[in-house]
Length: 71
Image (tube, rainbow, N blue to C red; front, side):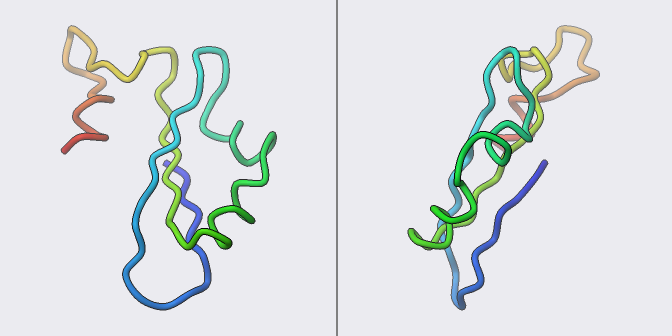
């Protein structure tokens, strides 16, 4: 999980940015200006790594992507 936290006081809302099937969590940092936008808007941006799971928990229970985000 990568997190961008703006340098401003107070509680901030959190935006979850999920990567696509062929990328990973670093795609938002490499291909966008997400740090600048988080600072401008005033929000924390959380970018979890979901492999190629479509953010569903695995059938064997070893990888809990959905639970990680929702719980």
